[in-house]
Amino acid sequence: MRYVVSIDQGTTGSTVLVLDEQLTVCGRGYQEFRQLYPEPGWVEHDPEDLWSSVLQALAQALAQAKVAPAQLAAIGITNQRETSMVWERASSRPLHHAIVWQDRRTAERCAQLRAAGHEAEVRRTTGLTLDPYFSGTKLGWVLDHVPEARARAGRGELAAGTVDTYLLWRLTGGAVHATDVTNASRTMLLDLHSRQFSPAMLQLLDIPSELLPKVAASSGVFGVTRGVPGLPDGIPISGIAGDQQAALFGQACFEPGDAKCTYGTGAFILMNTGELPVASSAGLLTTVAWQLGTGELRYALEGSAFIAGAAVQWLRDGLGFFSSASEVEALARSVPDSGGVVVVPAFAGLGAPHWRPEARGSITGLTRGTTRAHIARATLEGIALQNVDILRAMEQDSGRALSILKVDGGASANDLLMQFQSDVLGVAISRPAFVESTAMGAAFLAGLGAGVWHGTEQIRAVWKEQRRFWPTKERAPIEAHLARWNSAVARA
Image (cartoon, rainbow, N blue to C red; front, side, top):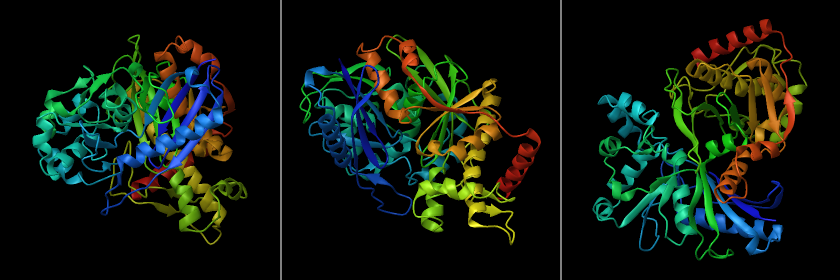
């Protein structure tokens, strides 16, 4: 029996799974790490904290799995995508803390580029919008604010990358400076068509090419372990993908039109659009879904709602509706409907397809009869209704009607939310037996890259559905509900 190690490096913690060839989880480890907020709107991580959390989670998973080192066939990495950092090649010492995807410090720089008329060029080349969310302006900020950084970068003394690149560097003892095409497509530096860093984007954002990693396929041997505590040397790192693309792959969304939604702090929806990038006219992002070592290439449309599970946390922590997030379903089920209440959870503005950063959360339709239960139910409905806007935009851009939506992430365990999502979309919702699809996708890619599995059909065969939700409501009341939602969004 051969085993695959999957490293899932997330925003608040690192998870490591050890899986066998039948995708049974034999060992699991998890370690949180510090969140740093040096100024309002700034979010940072210490790269050493990230690395330490991976090592601790790895030790936990291996101890639980009780696997002989010789049986470890491959390592896969998936990661928080746009978070980026710069370090010294000679010492691996970080030049500055990692700047996290949530960080907004480069908003003014993005506004300047937009005012100068560069947004259309950025979207045409990279598939992205001009936004501080992406990595390019973060790297530029480090070069501009750390003394001697630009000069050192030009001399080739520094390396930069997203979290996958940093972990690969550490796992290989500094031997490999590379990234995969999915993470590269989130930097605002990659040409979507050539799948290499764009000279025009490097010039626009003033990023020296000497700083950047090699761009490779998502599945294939990047390098082998060297000097990693708890691991023997020579294990291939053979799969890398950004977290949302890894979830798409982990959900076996292999055909054009297949889509998934990951319900985490926010909701992240990706639709497989096939072998060619689809430019969005509806406010979505175009991104690389994956590229296999065989040459198979898939693109995706992506839309994100900034708040999903965080809205339930707000009910718990901000309003004190309950003591545990898991209680929200029972409270919401205690009433037959939301009583006309509409919650727009735009606490961090509205994301795709609206892109209204100035929008704020709202509760409308309140009456003397409104209770905590109505607001709780309306909050769950608001999470689902945001996704309707995104998925309708995807259908418009792709020219494909959605037939089924695969779901994962913590909030996908909420049956009431999943049933309402099916009702308002008018399509089936499929929840997998294993909801940690992000880690599963990294394991799939690594196993393919190392020859543990031999093609996506083998993976499709082992993917299992836990439950399917079907639409149960008449369309007339659903359309009336959608009209109330659209009115509330317009006023948010």
